[in-house]
Amino acid sequence: TSLRDEASKKDILIGSGAINPTYLNDLEFAAVLANQFNSLSPENEMKWTFINPTKGHYNWDTIDRLVDFAEANNIVVKGHGLISSCCNPDFLLNITQPAAFYAAMKTHFEAIMHRYDSKINRWDVVTEALKTQGGGLNNNTFSQVLGPGYIADAFRIARAAGPDARLFINENLVESLPGKRQELYNLVSKLVAEGVPIDGVALQMHVTEVAPEPGVIAEMVNSYKTLGLEVSIAEMDVHTLDNALETDIYGAVISEALDAGITDISFWGFTDKHAYTWVPGAQPLMFDQSYKPKSEFYATHAALTNF
Ligand code: G3I
Image (tube, rainbow, N blue to C red; front, side, top):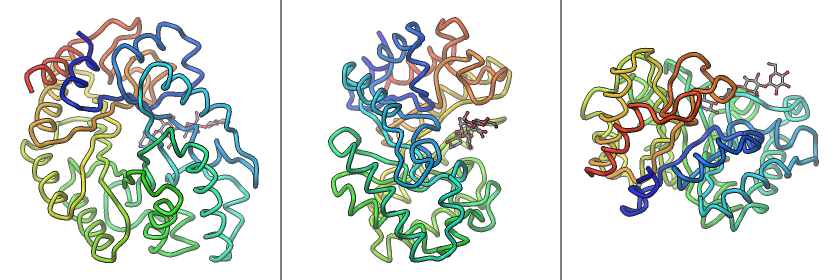
């Protein structure tokens, strides 16, 4: 059976992120994607400068292609990168006046969320709000112009533009850095206390050396549940260069996530093929360069089957 067969039986989303629509030209890639996953998200193509490089101009074709592929294969799409820590166009970077910057953000969100209104029902609204190692907000163009309130602004604009969509804050390394984990919790609980419309926390889960301490995923799921929020895994990959260790990490993380009640799990790609992973050479994914399932795949499959 495939990952998606096992997941779908249990109402679990099992997805691949990092799908650049041009990869679909590779028919083997497209076949594995359609066979194994019931969710997908783009890599960079929905980030601001890629989808909206100049004022008023949107590159819809790229994302339309992804959405059409998903629809044809009964796959749901997650929107990624409304606000991300990279990839902002000059026309935005040149706006220094807060009201104009806010208006640009609203226009951008509305254009994208309205276009995919019936096709995309969950979004990473803000990605990497915090500094990589923690210790404050990322000093990005949004916080520079709008101040720390840009996060609340973004969620409010997103809720108004897509009232039925589920809205996530997407963050890296919180599963492995206790200080940053607490910092994200403080940030999110403050948003909730202020009535900001946020539905969940998306853990990136780019594992570099060691798996998160056992219990950490469950602890996060429970603490966010008390705030009324969902936790998902959004971009898992494991780069240890030690195949046996990677396999153990895949199995342990997926089992713990499922046991904790997580129903939305995505990986940051699925093949180690160099052109298709952001860490070429690290062999971080579940299929090798010729699309053969690796032991990481079987560990994930077993976790889904045994859940
Ligand atoms: O398209 C330009 C090209 O025109 C230019 O010549 C070239 C020169 O550097 O850059 C190209 O853009 C690159 C872009 O990928 C598209 O290929 C950027 O430099 C490069 O930084 C960017 O990397 C992406 C990265 O996010 C940016 O932060 C990775 O592909 C992408 O996998 C990665 O994904 C992120 C998630 O969005 C958020 N979580 C972490 C994850 C991994 O870093």
